[in-house]
Length: 328
Length: 259
Image (cartoon, rainbow over all chains, first blue to last red; front, top):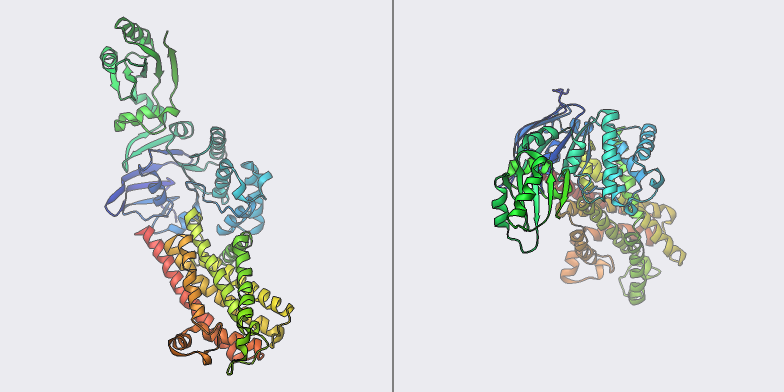
């Protein structure tokens, strides 16, 4: 019998591979119907955590329950309750989409008639009815991901795990998949545990996120709350070729705390908000600092990540509300 | 109902996978036939050596080896397919589903058995078209096909255990020459009573010799249920050995993920 109402609970979850500790004491509690984003760079421990929660890996320490069942003691019950779409859409390329859905239905103990009905419904939902009898090897990356999602949903799971579902997809396919996840969550109330390295994805989909780095959760909460905690926007100055960064950094010190940036740029957390951009531009001009442009970023999840870890997340440039102020 | 449906569904998938890969099916069907045709050209006069069993042609003598050779091809394919499932993540999808662990093995082995059964009918059918007599008739063809199917599942299980342990289809295919050597070190292409020295000792010890001779009897002299039972028993023994290896390999992989 399920032991708890929260569909995902992890307490002190640890996983070691030899001397390497991939996950170091992760605690999670995810509410029913929530879309939870698990955000972190490559190698942070996201997939290892998912593999423990989906019974594919046994935790070295700690415990976890999914859909109310212990992932170690009641692994079979967990598997019956979850849908899993792992990284790289592990789909047999020699089978057709329709055949794979029928197979997945059988593996979940769904009878033939119901499996067929559910398969057709899902093919329609993910927009693959027209390609259902084509071998999966001929599908594009986006089609494979959509089929993977349909496969994970064949038994109407209580909890859906999506491990980096849009990695490698083009922007259109990515947005289409996001729409599917939103619709699914809204219509069926399925709890979604989503891992991603894309800030925008977490921002767009998740009602709550946890940021993991080095196997530890370094921040968690609603995206809006986490961004509000960062406070001021970031002002990023693109320097003209040949312009030294030192004088620009010194000139900006009066306006806010420096933020790490790439070569040829300087950045600060701008005290007083967007209204002070003009003053910054004037000071830079007065001091003869040559710039190519100014960009004002409202706090993003990357800023949240940077605040928690002291560095930027890979792919950070893909997100954040940006107001660009070109140099005169 | 659910477990039986899972066995059936995974067996069907294995069979479809095999059929849809002509590069693995065609060699398994064609090469053994080419091999016996060429061997016949070179060795046909050997049938007149005193002590050689009374046969119409070398093909009639050697066709059991062709069947076993075909089975080896198919079985290695089953092992390679299992390794491919591990390589491309499909195995993990199965592991995350409420599927019985045995059905993962049974599905693959049923595919190998079906392939071996089909190969036996094909090879025996082709030689019949070319005028070679099968003394035991259609009953012999059926009995031989059963032995082939059990052997296919058995050697398939050994190959599948390699696939699970290595997770590499190349490694499984690399083991094919070893299995092939086992066939040559038997009475597949020459009667044991005409062998000498260490080769004869090895062939006497090699269970494939006795299996092949059990099949051969049905072709060159007619139905002999005793010899057939010996062949079937050896195939079943190889099957049991293979299943133990495959089961342990699967346990090992699951424990590696769960250690």
